[in-house]
Length: 464
Ligand SMILES: Nc1nc2c(ncn2[C@@H]2O[C@H](COP(=O)(O)OP(=O)(O)OP(=O)(O)O)[C@@H](O)[C@H]2O)c(=O)[nH]1
Ligand SMILES: [Mg+2]
Image (cartoon, rainbow, N blue to C red; front, side, top):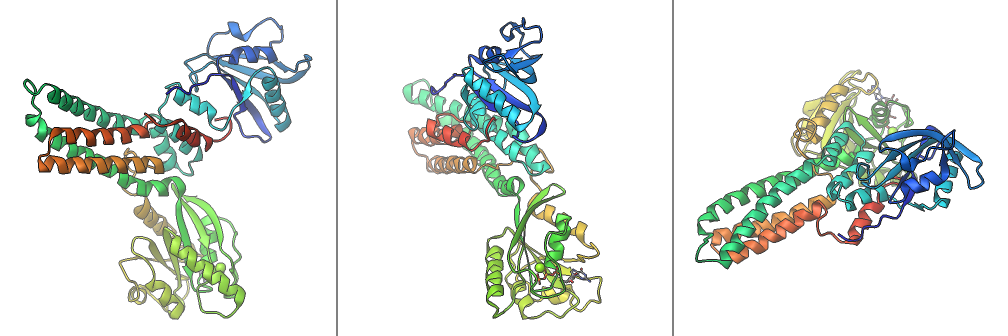
């Protein structure tokens, strides 16, 4: 790839808010010179250009008139042993919003250009220190909402996905080369006797790719969270459940049916599973125009959710609204909570089961007493993360781009399987093998275009 630039860039790499310290990162061929123009040690003699790599220096950043802007520590990291694989200087200053900005401005006046979003990581990629999937994992790592997401992206940052892709690609290349050679020199080399071996390898590749694609399903839950909607008739205790899960009184709870009118969404992480939790208005038939809109919104959220938590008031008989909701619950995407079990039971699991269209878990619950809470979190883990990254070291695909490319490779290898079964000629094999090889290559960033690379890195945050 040839769109490498190494002009010197700079940006604030920490959050811009009042904090203990703020860091300005400078990277590029003139990083050290630029830093030397603004930095001086107390004695004024020491120059960063003479400093060894990976050393820290105390001193001041001064503006062009020599006035001190901040007291700082400067870290020098020389190419290629830095995040970008270029000469890099990091200035740690006092973390005031204004002071950090002033230091950045001074660095820019001294010859650096402001970095674009993700440009440091983009350079690490363009300089070959990390591949594209590893760079993308850096972003997922920063955005992780729970331990599992963090663990998975950390693994991918360190090459857990890349190494699997590279292994398969290496094997593909070996077979392609052998086929090409036998086509060139049919007298001395024959691929005939390797066809069985290729068929077997292809089965292995297909299995491995299918498993990775399958992991993407859980991957979305791990990375982004499970879109969860709390549904039920008015007064069933939906908002009480919302507050219980959030650990704070976020939604209004009253004994008046129809308290919640609009949808309310909050993100919460319970024991390594993240829920994007939506409380809704009680679903029922009403003529009130405001309530009607609320009920409509509730239904729409219910349709689109990954998970419905259906609240049933166990102290009352099931009514039409309950029954309608129970009938519309989907297998694998619903849990029924028999709420208010601290009161005398009128409706039990057997009553509810009659209306369920599938085998759906029913949990005895009390939002006020917190009964059933553990059982609920266990059920959530069973449904959304068991068998994936939490319990073993499998790679989980959390990136849509990776998933699409894996599917492309799968299509090509399926064609290859057909050609092998039908006993077609060998040049058919190489075409499909090479298509699959290229699709997998794009995951790690081989032969991807400049536009795509720019697009991917533009989604990063500033200073990363
Ligand atoms: N005894 C008992 N009361 C509960 C329980 N959960 C909720 N309640 C009470 O039931 C009433 C309704 O609770 P909410 O959480 O507002 O119910 P909701 O489903 O959000 O109601 P709407 O927003 O009106 O649809 C309140 O008085 C709660 O205190 C429970 O487990 N046991
Ligand atoms: Mg409510």
